[in-house]
Length: 250
Image 1 (cartoon, one colour):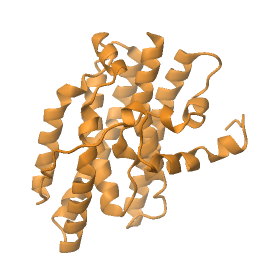
Image 2 (cartoon, rainbow, N blue to C red):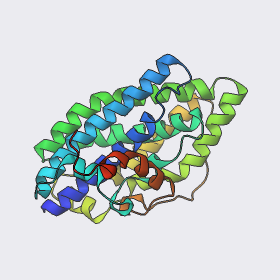
Image 3 (spheres, one colour):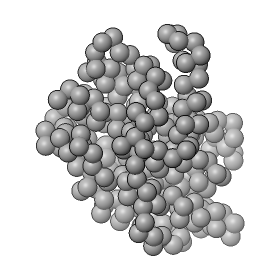
């Protein structure tokens, strides 16, 4: 049971870790000071959530495992984030589209995780959802601004949505650990979120005068440790200090 719960937590937390690393890389590169600070704060929010998850996971694993061990000392195939969050910041439109597509899911997920029979996961969800509510509002507003803005901004955000759409279906795939945790009333049945998710996302896209992608072809693999080439580069930055100076304490 502990091993299943441990891996289930990684499946949740790794999404926030990798997306937090992506957003943190934008510090100093935002289109305006206000937006730059907002993106940095979103990154910090996600890392704060990650620490809560990893501290709990470390306690479950035992053997003197720490949150740093879990964050920095795993190999690429041992991360279980969805492919969406590791996609690159091609331009600001891609950053916003990626954030929006994940935020819309993340908010729905945490809403349900609050009901978990696991009091620690429930408490993390109740604390995190306040932050994610802001993330969702921030990215949704930017989708509307870019979509209903200039011809160039509309074109860029439409391209980003079209490209990233192929990674959205994986959000609703269940691993074996997911299924076990759902049966124990600990985890969230993500399959039940799919219809609500696409209804909400499509509503924002229509409001932003954007076309809803018609592609029915989706990519998957991240939840099982099979990633795009981008994750390796993310981890090389993320893990550099810990691997260069082993056993260093922060």
